[in-house]
Image (tube, rainbow, N blue to C red; front, side, top):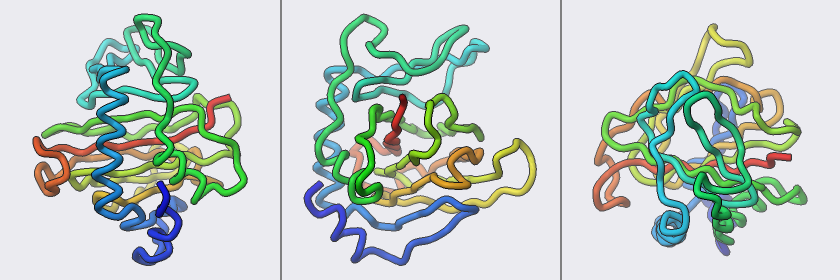
Length: 211
């Protein structure tokens, strides 16, 4: 995204939520629309799936991926896979998304996975850690598009105090440093609080270094 860094500099002040760095309005509205077009290309090459947890429960979000690895969750197994379940490679991470990473993680490695979650009405994501990667020195960078989502962050152990904040379209969260392994999730969304997605809903993009 050509204007990612300059957009971040002009956005609202950086916020801290229990160690998570939040950059409100980092991605301007016109760039958000362009990102949606990139995501449609991804979805045509790797259609959204309804993930099944190892315990057999269907998650409320729908999911797809791009990059060297994609995230797959199904009965009895979940984790990073080099190919889609049908054997096809994952599509490449769009340059505009990579630009957000490079603006916030300068001089770092390229991310190897872009995980795309779609939250429809009533969808949520329970508190969890992102710990299936090998090297926790690299952050997880998360981009919000569409409807507002109530983001919750706790500590590195389950239980204990948490903090919450509504994320809006264009906000970017960086989970790094002491917050890299913090439990986090999305309690709910405000369905149709944004006009970015014609049918409503929230799209969350998370960039990770896997290996």
